[in-house]
Amino acid sequence: MALFGRRKKQQEDVVEVAETPTLPPPPPTDAGGLRSMEDHRAYLLEQIEQLPAFGQQILDAIDLSICEDIESDIDLPGFDNSAMDGYAVHAADTVGAEEGQPVVLAVVGEVAAGGWSEEPLPPGTAIKIMTGAPIPEGADSVVPYEVTDRGSDDVAIRVPARTGQHIRRRGEDVTEGDLMMRTGERLGARTIGLLAAIGVDKVMVRPRPRVVVLATGSELVEPGRPLENPAQLYDSNSYLLAGAARADGAQVFRVGLVGDDAEAIKQSISDQLVRADLIITTGGVSQGDYDLVKAVMPELGMTDFCQVAMQPGKPQGFGLIGEDRVPMIMLPGNPVSAYVSYEAFVRPVIRKLMGIEPLFRPQVRAIATHLIRSAPGRKQFARGVVTTDPGGRRRVTAVGGHGSHLVSNLAKANALIVMDPDVDQVAAGSPVTVWLLDENG
Image 1 (cartoon, one colour):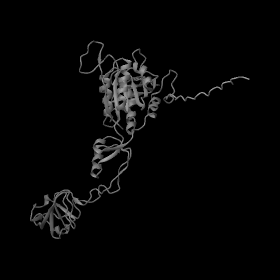
Image 2: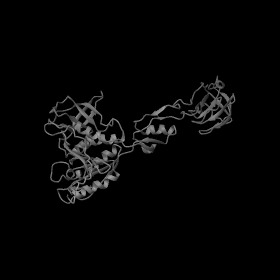
Image 3: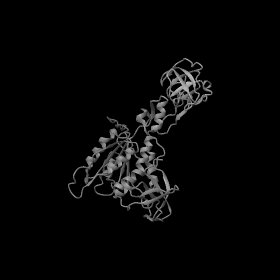
Image 4: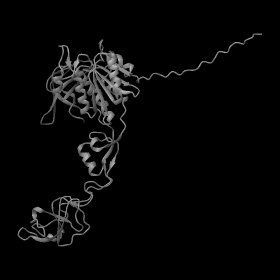
């Protein structure tokens, strides 16, 4: 008999390995491995959630998207009041008044804006009244100063009054319960004035997204500093993108330049995550040896790099970075490429974060004033100037060449001319699609 039985195999502890989070499957590509602009834009927008709403003072909420229906709790005006400086009277007491034979009434007092009296106006008398002051009980008309002698004890009225003249009736502008704003509408100066008029000082809105803008590249120099060698150039991209994001309503943090150093890029991005709802970078996403953004960002989060069938703006990157999965859009480094990419991808994301519709620029048709050539196979974006003739017909003229470094022509443009991949030219006099850059829709 064996002294020792066979040792039972110990049950191994089961260790659950957490799955590494990944982005959703990317959109399909064409035979050349290119993703359509529309598919890439939709892919980004599907992964963006609107910022949560919170109460904000109306003046701070200008241009933001309201997240509640607002009804008036009061009538506006809240009482019958005078539309003129003059005298409140009984219209019947002024019958027969003429230039040479005025009607004279005793003036029994004065009421100013903000004043209030419960005393009715006796027949055969008048009371001096200022614009906005409440109409005394019994009075049914206001005689303006211009047709009186402006008397203090007695007033001579030279023109008969009509019942109801120069009186603003209670509730004629707004009635209690009227819907003032609907969810999704944007607050402008005039709507802020309306809300203040009905006593609203705070509204639920989606906040301005905190957008961090960062440019990479050791060749870049801050404007205002000297260029140390002919190979350096001033950073325009981060200023261009920061300005565009601010114009679109974002709260923008432009970060200093980051050179071609992998650790510096990672550290700079990591440092910004705490204050960002969206990070935009420019440069470092193409195929070069120094395109380090593309190389290092997968270490910080889930990323997607692709080639989009558009020109300019072919190389694109997107990621959800850090523990909070902050959206990050990585744009190419040439200035025009960066700006066209901003219009195509970043601006719609900012507007979705803010809950603002429509997401995209107004897209209209304009008549080409000259032949415009395009390289087929990709969606082409050319800079253009759109004008409108006296008959209301839009015309567009391309400015500059197709080079993605030509920033002076970009500054002159007020539109992007959009040509589909199957178009090789647009003849003079033919319609073409344009994005209007100075209109929000």
